Image 1 (cartoon, rainbow, N blue to C red):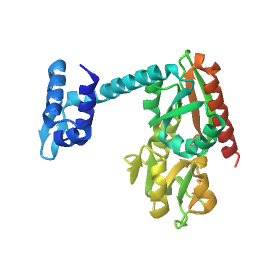
Image 2: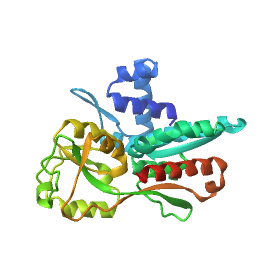
Image 3: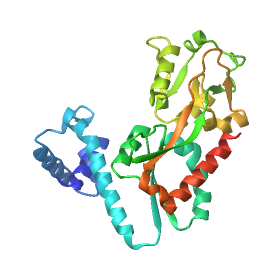
Image 4: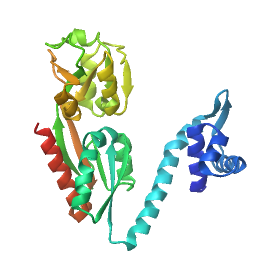
Amino acid sequence: MNTESLKTFLIVADTKNFRKASQQLHITQSTVSSRIQELENHLGQKLFERASKGLSLTPAGYKLVPYAENMVNLERTMLDNISRSNTRMRFLNIGISDSIYYAYMRRLVPDFLKAHPEISLNFTSKSSPDMMNYLQDNQVDICISFLPNYDKSYETLTLAEDEIILATGRHNTEYVNGISKEALGRIPVYASLFFHVNRDMKQWYASTFPANFHYRIQTDVIWNLIYFLKNGDGYALLPRTFILDELENGSLISIPMDFDRPPHLYMYACLKKQLLQEHKVQCFLDEVIKKIQKRNSF
């Protein structure tokens, strides 16, 4: 098994079409077919089935996807680290939740790069559980997410504590003076999956919403909800500082909740303890903490 076959498998899994995969990879369609056949022979499992709208993954194919992604990413990390060994530039690989990246990192990066021209940042942005796996596989140096890591070989720093508010577009004024728990179960709610990252959040949701409650929209990235809130009739429970700009400019408003408030959301930086003393890590964490504290003070 080689990574070229795995890369080809991932492209085919994404496009569901050998021809489109060959165009993306700039190889012939027969080469794509040959690589997939080689992989299937090696694993002793069929990975794709033909469907009316193209190819579909078999159960074995679905199981292979995360392993293939990890192996391809691990090879990329290895090659990057080896190629960088002869340069004076200090490279920092950061795994970060999509939502945290949009809320904080894009504001921080320009100033940080100006202040530290000797440091190069490489961001990988996915869900909190995915980022924790990347950290454990040494694909990233620091993981910034909503999940702590209690393994003794890791250091977990609490970066921020944020309150959860019920937000909606400024045109939705029916509950501007407050909403009851019963009314919350009747309105259209847009949800981000960050609420399922820890037990306290899950318990609050289970005790607050009626059984078989269905969200109007679900997404794994908080940022995706803002457009729908501004232009739709829905409401969403969101970290206050993530939508601070929208609250200040009035495009979103906060609805008071006349019942038990959601537990606070915590943001963490996790890394291996031996990395704490590295200059690039100290510089980055100092800047992150400073920016977050400044934004959370509003």
